[in-house]
Every structure is written in C-alpha cells, then in structure tokens.
Image (cartoon, rainbow, N blue to C red; front, side, top):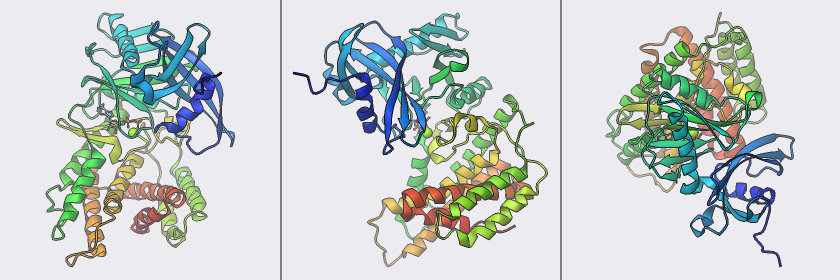
Length: 474
Ligand SMILES: Nc1ncnc2c1ncn2[C@@H]1O[C@H](COP(=O)(O)OP(=O)(O)O)[C@@H](O)[C@H]1O
Ligand SMILES: [Mg+2]
C-alpha cells in the first residue's frame, strides 16, 4: 500500500507553493517544469537541497522560484507546518522534506557559509564556495556565529530569516539570472557609508558568468525598527480618535517624520548618483517618457470608469513634460512606499531595492527619474487615511463629525505630510520644472493604481481617482 503522503519533489512543490504567502503566482494555472538542484548544504541530518523550480504558466509565462528543502531520514514533528512530502532519494534513501527556511538547523548552514567567506580572506571580506553556492562577504563586520535563525513572520514576497538580533538573511523567491538590484544597490550604499539603509554584510549566488543567479543577501538587523506604514496609520488613528483635532495638532503628528524621510531619500538618491554612474546615452527623452505615460493612460481609460473626465488634464501635464529639454535619470529604488521604510532610533532606513515586482529584471535595471520614487511616497501618504477608514469600517458617524468631515481631516493629514516630505526632499521650494516632474510621475502612478484597483478592489478605485482629480492642468 502506498502512503498517501508519498510523492516526488515535483509533485510536492505545486501544493506547497499554493500554501505559502510569498508565492506570487497564486490563482494562475501553471505546471511545474524542470526542478534543478543548484546546491546541497550539510551532510545529513539535515541535508539542504537548494532547488530552482521552473513554473510554466498556462498563458506562456515562465518563472523560476528558489525552494530550498531540508531533508531528514526520520520525520521532524517540529517542522510539520513546513512539510512538503516524503520520497525515496537515489543517494539518501527515504527522506522527509520540509521548507528549509523554517528549520534553524538548515538556516545555520547559510550563516556558516557567510562566516567561511570572511575567514577565507583574513577579515577583509571575501568569498567561499560551499556545496555549489558562492558566499560573498563585505569587509568590516563580525557576524555572531552563535545566533539562531528564525523565520520572519511579516508579509513578504521573499523570505527572511533573522539570526538573533544580529543579521537578517533574505532569500529571493523569484529568481532570474543576473545581478539582483537589491544586492548591487545595497552593496554600493553600504560601501559609501550611507546611514539610511541596513548595511549589507554579504550575498549568496549560484552559477557562473551569464548563468550566475543571486539567491539571497545578508544584512544588518535593525533592532529598533518600526515599519513606516504602521507608524503612519497609527498617527491617523490618533487623529481620528478626536473629532476636534486637526492634523497639525495630533499627538501623533507625522510631519516631522515625513520631513526626515524626505531628507533620507534625498541622501540615498545623492549617494546613488555619485557612486553608481549610469549610462545616460540611451536614456529616454522627456518626449519618450511622456509618450509612455500617455500610452498607459490610453490603456487605463478602457479599464477605469471615471478616469475619462480627467484625461485632458493629465495629457496637458504629460505634454508639458514632453517639452522639457532633458530628463535626469539615475539608479532609483523603483518601488518606494511607506511599507519600504523603517524608522529606527538612528533615523529612517529605506529597504528592498529590488524594484517594481511586476517588471522584468532588465526593466528594473534601467535608470529612471528620481521623481518616480518621490511620487511613490506621496501616493502612499494619500492612501494611508483611506486604509484607516477601511479598517475602522464599524465607525459610526457621531454628532460631532460626519464622514465628510473626517475625510477632510484625513486629506489634510495626507497633504500636510506630502508637503513636509517634498520640501525636505527638495531642500526648499520646488522649481517649476521639479513641480512639473512631481505632477507627471504622480499622475502616472495614480493611473497605474486606478487600473490595479479597478481590477482587484473596485471599492478602492476612488482613492487614486481622487488623487488624479487633484492634479492641476499645465
Ligand atoms: N534590516 C532589517 N532589519 C529589520 N527588519 C527588516 C530589515 N529589512 C527588512 N525588514 C523587515 O522585513 C520586511 C520585508 O523586507 P523587504 O526587504 O521589503 O522584503 P520583500 O522583498 O520580501 O518585500 C520589511 O518591511 C521590514 O519590516
Ligand atoms: Mg518589501
């Protein structure tokens, strides 16, 4: 009789992916293609197989996911929640397989790889080859070798493991050959001494030359960090708790934080511009960028009811952009919003430089306008009051305040923090050209959001539409 759990790695992967929070292909039809073992760490109890799994979607897309498995001869009850299946392995006999990131015995093997990379080069940083992986270290930090790994429980598209309070290992789930910008950008910012990112300690890769794939990175663990998005929402909850209060009076007034965040972004942009020169010879002209924005607007008009009323205004903003002589581009964050910021005792840090998840790696590596990042943050300030409103759906109108009045105070909160953020970023008043750039990128972002909301959360489409409506004609 066969055991109901008996399977093969290939059979076990699809049902497991469906259960994880990081798998981006949920709800799409796919089949598992090639399952490639790129590395093996450890020599039994456990073995860790680092798999790269090809997923072939019904619509023709192909993606590759990193799925490291920890394999034990006997069942490990403590890992039941991360169980994939059991099967007979040609080299090891019968094995029980679990998601390796849940297993501290397994994650320790990555930590030891990074430790080896340092020892190999007498403290100056270096590399170590272990089991098919190449571990790279930057100079200047002694890892806590005894730190125990635990899986980070936050909402993520990748998977992170905390090593005590010492370091944090992020393993990329969706992987593509070539350098991951999260690694390269953190590398540059760390070596330049930026105080606004978690320092990079090292990274891990497999393959060589054109086949090299970045699989993960090890960073400074920010002990005192609070998520910027959570902080913003609690500031708004404070504001809403008292109908008499205006945004500037609220105990949780956020404007000081918004300003410091603007300074942090400016410093990060300045450092990237200075340290990571980009090839601007193929940079798009303002007219080409405006044309792309117009195309996205055209496509959105077919999807979002209510956008048409603003189309003319948006086109006049894009036309003004097209008339600029020149557009500065550089390496940027690419997917910036409050959820990618952490406030620590030592100021704001910006995380996750992987770029917009929906874009291809080649697109994410293109230099872009820094105003795209600025617009991302400004839109995030705009969303925050609406999200609190949704979370407090049981709020009933009181004699003191109607919903419209409360929304007006929420908008005041958003506009106040946008103003402080922007002024700090620009170091004062914006020039006419800067003002135009902000509005063009804001419009483009809000159009993108409107399409997303129309498709996924139709009740929310009013949020970006209201943002679009506030954009003035040029
Ligand atoms: N260096 C760090 N120290 C402490 N917490 C961190 C650190 N880096 C990230 N985090 C936390 O992990 C979350 C996810 O990190 P992120 O890099 O955005 O991963 P993902 O690529 O999966 O989105 C962040 O929102 C933050 O809460
Ligand atoms: Mg993130």
